[in-house]
Image: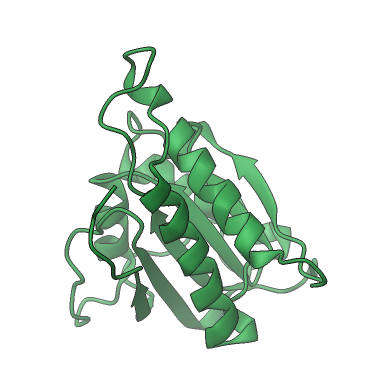
Length: 187
């Protein structure tokens, strides 16, 4: 991580496919299904294959089990054995299902000074899809609602330097890609 590298890419990842119910009966404890793990691993492989500048150094996750497990599966895929990539995970309560889009944006903005050129937010709909829509430039084609395990890769050609921005400005990003594992939902 370079302490002076401004953020230029934000990957917004909706958690992978999760169980309908948890053993505890609470939504916060719903775990990933095997398909959800494969989705996160596939996103990691796609990031590795696309371009080195797409590789994050930080994954910021909701505290809910399904989001944390998505972040962990993505981290494992990005840090494959023998690689020198080091991807950290931070849990941020502002990415939970009960928080607003503004709080989600604060979770990302608070990392501007951290020297992460690319970072990943892992969370939940409908807030993540709204966040993508609000960050894209006004004339951009809107991707619609993110599916489970889908990632929107947002890019700022003029990097977001913490010395100039205390928050990520709305309508300032371009959509570089939508990434998702395409396979039948069989589990």
